[in-house]
Length: 155
Image (cartoon, rainbow, N blue to C red; front, side, top):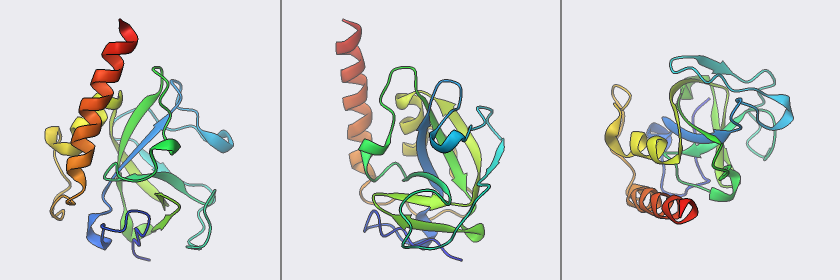
């Protein structure tokens, strides 16, 4: 099984390594799944399905390199933002503005700014990873927008 990130259009098989996703403050997400909030924890989907036509369920979901459908993220101020290193050899398919994957390792747990900073370059990239996608500049702009939005909400 290889990664097929058609959700982003610009990403290729060797670039679906960092996945950005959100969950509740307690790690809760849809379908009663609870994400580990410990960096270094391995997470695996209990009902993995590699059908690339499936758009919901059957995998853990997120935005590869933080690029995709931002409406799928939890923008609540209490949300936890995770960066997951995806084991693409174990399964990863793209669908509907996101990627769906079988397993990964939680590399970062924080807020929207810290998680996007981690992907943009504040954190180490997986060994042997490909060049960052060209669209990543948009993610850097999202970081600035999120920080500005947060400042306005606090005022």
